[in-house]
Amino acid sequence: MANINIIRDLSNAFGPSGFEEDVVQVIKKYCVGMDVTNDSMHNVYARLKNNTGKKPVIMLDAHTDEVGFIVQSINSKGLISFATLGGWVTSNIPAHTVKIKNSKGELITGIITSKPPHFMTDAERASDRPDIDYLYIDVGATSRKEVVEDFGIEVGDPVMPDVTFEYNKKNGILRGKAFDNRLGCMCIIETLNALKDKADLNVDVVGAFAAQEEVGMRGATVTSQVVAPDLAIVFEGSPADDLYFDEFTAQCALRKGVQIRHMDQSYISNTEFIRFAKEQANASGIKYQSAVRKRGSTNAGKIHLEGKAVPVLVLGIPSRYVHTHYNFCAEEDIDATINLAIEVIKNLNEESLNRIMRK
Image (cartoon, rainbow, N blue to C red; front, top):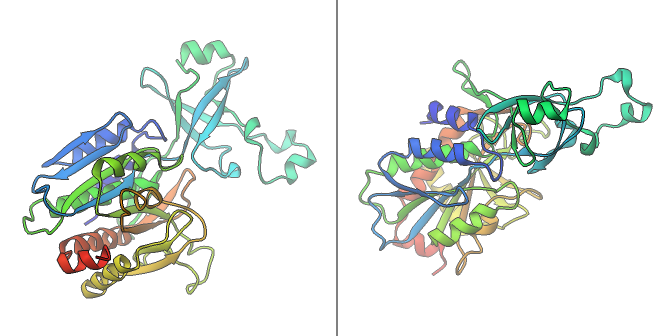
């Protein structure tokens, strides 16, 4: 079910928050046989051609952006100061390579500086959280003039982690960057592909790929207004916790199936929608795990407040080390996520819709 080529192209695409245009092109490439448009914010809308405009609308959401950086200034030595786009733990930033996209579209490789222990003070050695104001990107230049004239780098240029996607066929594990949330984008595409020839659906289906989630769920504020959904499924590359908790406490473990999220900082789920999703999972033998999160958020936080309120089902693909350079996920968990979304949509009818929307 999981299309590795789609995941590869989405993961490798350049797309920090506000600079998602390359991701837009990948999405358009794979949304074949659908009505696809985008807006000025880089939000993408993919509508099934068998939509009637007369049925309840279910919106499939995933965000296109990844955590990254933006060039803030360039000093006389040619070192580049940067600001973060999205949430980073500063101790995860130094000594990694990045790609800066200049105004010509060229990708320039840089290394985020890290002071060797030889030059550290005792206080610096003791600290596990470097001050981001003292981190720079080094592109191998020795002057500001060289950075600007030879590399074409300017203030405002976006920066992404430098990671190339890999797939291990032996164990079905994927490694790459931006699994939060390019995995969700792939789930929308494959769910739409599975449904595009079904004329007997009781809902119209719209894929909404939202920009700028990592900086405040901004894209979903727009997409939810444009689509005006009656209900929604949010796909998310959810932070895996199986390395930190025992088997009874972990709620987002690799190889344990799709995560059904009941709550996080941004929303409390619609209990009837979750009940319906679990019924479909149990009937189809789809593995799932339930989660209650005290922190974190998804686009559900914006979507569920649109119009007269929108029931939202959040489906997560467990992903290790999100908001860092490198991520792992399991192919079988992606399959479970797509399969559950398909079963939910296929089995929506007047009775279940009324139940979920509490009519």
